[in-house]
Length: 154
Image (cartoon, rainbow, N blue to C red; front, side):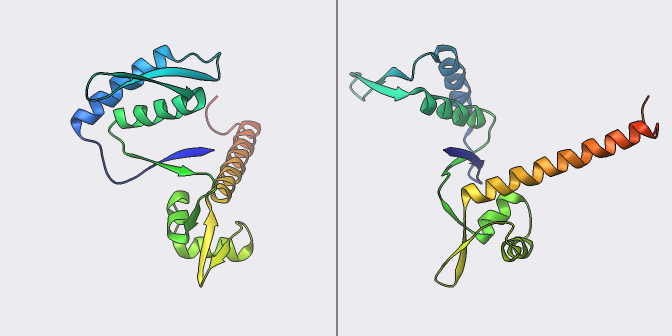
């Protein structure tokens, strides 16, 4: 599995326009009933070269183009990639020292490469999903309490 994350190099105005249009066109022609689709790539001489592409890869390409079409830059990260503690902290929007505490407590698995800690991308995302789910559960519980106490909107 590969996911998208934003990076700091933004697309040009021309790239945004091209991405927006190509995202729209690919979405319109994507056949989701098959596992792959044939697309034609044209070289500099105008010769067509058919390429068989998995539909899952085309969906990812549409997501990339959609984000680019909004003016966002994207970076594709393999799910099995190792991250530095700074990269992992950035993904979680927390400080590196706080991430270090999470690692030491065992909340997120890590391994060492020499003297440096490394965290697998999939483990960071799993932690984020758990944290987000716990946050939603807490908000739901607060909303239920507010309803029971007749606090808030009625």
